Each structure stands twice: as structure tokens, then as C-alpha cells.
Length: 260
Image 1: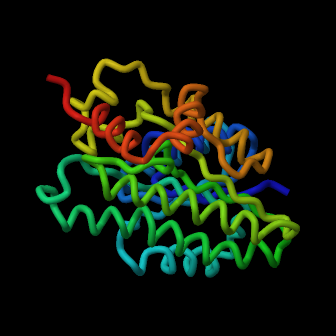
Image 2 (image 1 turned 30 degrees about the vertical axis):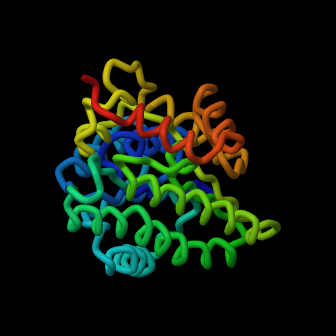
């Protein structure tokens, strides 16, 4: 039986590439994002190229009611979800006392609340059907505090800890959970977060969304719980556990600052 994947934030970046990978393997798709036009274009492309059945749902996922609305629509249409990719999310850059609260509140809702609610809704069904694969897109930001992006880093701390916790709870059920932890990726994230002048990304050759999505999808299929993309990213994530917290904070602050 062909597997159906629900992908949030599917209209661009890593989410779009995950959609292409799943379709190329013969799977069906439910694509969720805000832009109906982008979703329709992607639906047409995937159906024509791969023959996939693609359902699109245009929705602002930062709204508290959005996950349940998506879930109810799929139940009404008798669409079973086998793979769940919680990819939607965004960041913001700047000193916390100067940044915009409304944007940060929306970030917390999308990066944390929406991801958790989707997981809650679909995990129950996956346990009952004795099969399911969930990917929550975290970040290398999950492993340390993030001066100048403090709220974003904190949301990704949550995603990693939540994913690891429920991965353990779900052992033996047929359901696996993978936290994908990419570093800076050429995905449009930096533009949205207004951080293109940060030393972390300015002039740095970043992996493509396609590379990261491919690594993430392979890790998901293997049932890997924590999937850190890139050798240097793995080294940095591991080394931060053994360094004094004061040094970790200083190093992150240094690389996050804008280039002179």
C-alpha cells in the first residue's frame, strides 16, 4: 500500500524537497502551507512528474485551531497519514528587548504549539494502525543557547527534547520519531529571519535544502531518533556538552553577531 505523507511548510525549502522525495518513491501527499498558489503549482508538478495523489490545504499554521482543522478535514476525506513531517517554522534575529513580541509569539505558536498538536493528533492514529513515521524539524540550535536568536533557539530546544521523549515512549508500537537537526541551510530561512549579515551565514557555503531533506528522509526511514546533518555540525553539537556554559554562550554570541 502506498504511504501518504503530511508535510507542513511544504511550499518551499526543506518541506518542498521532502515532498519531491516522497513523491519520487511513489507515495501520496498532503501538503500544508499558507500560500495556495505555491501549493497548487507544486501539486501540479508532482502529479505530472510522479503520478502521486496530492491534497493541498492552504492554512496559517500559527493559528491555534489550524492543526485540528487539518486533522478533521483529512478524517472527513478518509485520508490516512503514515508519515508526518512537522517542518513548518521560522526564526527571528535581534536583541530580545528590541524584537517584536507579536512575531515571537507567532514563532512560539508555530514552532512549538502547532508541531506538538499535529504530533498529538496523528500519533494516536499511528499507534492504532501499528505504523507511522514522524519527523520533527529541529536544528543544531537545539543544542545550545542562542544569543541574538534566543526565542528561536529555545523553541528548537523544545522540539529536540519533545521528540526524544516521545520516541522512547513509542518503542514497540511501530511508530518512530526523528528529530532532524540541520545547521544553516540554503532554504530562505535566513531572509525570513533577517539574519543574512550574521557571521553564521554571511559568505558561508551552506548545504542545499535538497541535501538536508535527503539526509532527513533517509534518517526517518532508518528510525534514527536524532539526525544531525553534516560532520562539523555533529562535532559542534557534541562538543557543546563538554564546554563550560559561559564559553558556549560567548561562542554562539560571537558567530551570531553581524559582520563588520
